[in-house]
Amino acid sequence: MSIVMNRRAALLAGAGLLALPHVAKAQAAYKSEYKLTVVGNRPIPLSEGAFQWADMVTQRSGGRINVKVYPGSQLVGGDQTRELVAMRQGVVDFGVFSTINISPQIREMNVFSLPFLLNDHKGYDAIINGPVGEELFRTLSSRDVVPVAWGENGFREISNSRRAIREPGDMRGMKIRFAAGAIFSEIFTALGANPVQMSFADLQPALSTGAVDGQENPINLYLAFRMDTLAQRHLTVWNYVADAGVFTVAKSVMDSFAPADRQLVQECARDAARAQIAASRKGIGVDADRSSLEELGRRGVTVTTLSDAEKQAFARATRPVYDKWAQTVGADLVRRAEAAVRGARA
Image 1 (cartoon, rainbow, N blue to C red):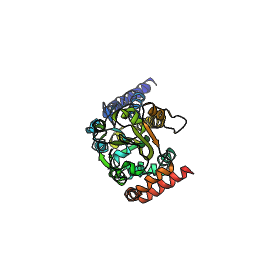
Image 2: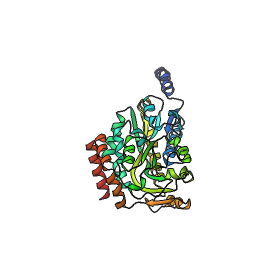
Image 3: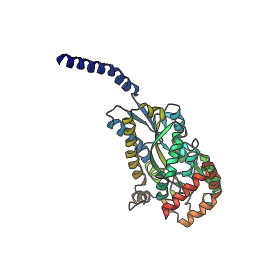
Image 4: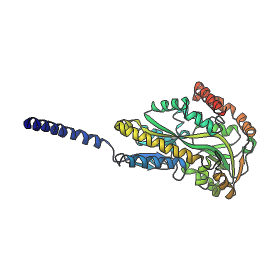
């Protein structure tokens, strides 16, 4: 009996020895650092969500998956429109992307930028949590990118240094900065403004020098970067488009992880995304909290909140742009998005 036991022990030991190189090889396959890109920096919610995701993955994996955030799109020289390309080229491992910044490469993402399609967060949620959001994830997956969670950068409002904007004619002649995407150039041209494409890194100097009169971004970003100190004394709340956030991993990187680690990465993304969405909506009146709007008042910013009727004037002026870009996005996808938004309002 002892001979049999010893022989069995020897066989098990041998099997263990044979397995050790395989385990070591699997561990060695993981990088010492995984690079995560995001536009902007703390404290804006989009960037904060990226840092939270990185911290969660690193901590919950016990440091096995060590993720480091490179804010300000610094891995692509500050040009946030190149982040998706950099991921596909292997320069970036993880990314929290703004859909506006990836829409030049993924035309379907322009659905969030169709002027006055969404109007409020109920419509936005209907898109990201429904079949349209699932289809957009499938589209991303076909581009060597694994989307793991929807986040939110927020509805984009417009500020400027010259006057309150309440009707389309108020924008005539204004130089308005936009981040990316030909659709934005066409929207502001239709409203009589002079659109200027510019990276976020160049925006603050341009506002300081008066190279541009205004810009459009979520309120949380306006506050975080003290745009009121950059002559942006007029802000109009019009919710003309939304900017979604997408938590992504390069396909080659995700495929290199063990199944349990893939699940860990996704669960961490979902947790960080929920916190990011809550932070993006904080204080803007989505619920009873109006602290961000009140802070604008304390800073002496003139806030103009458009009524539904006033928004319709802008919607009519930009309708040709909407119709043109609906064909680019995909007529069927847009019809389903419109139906989802109507359902959310019912």
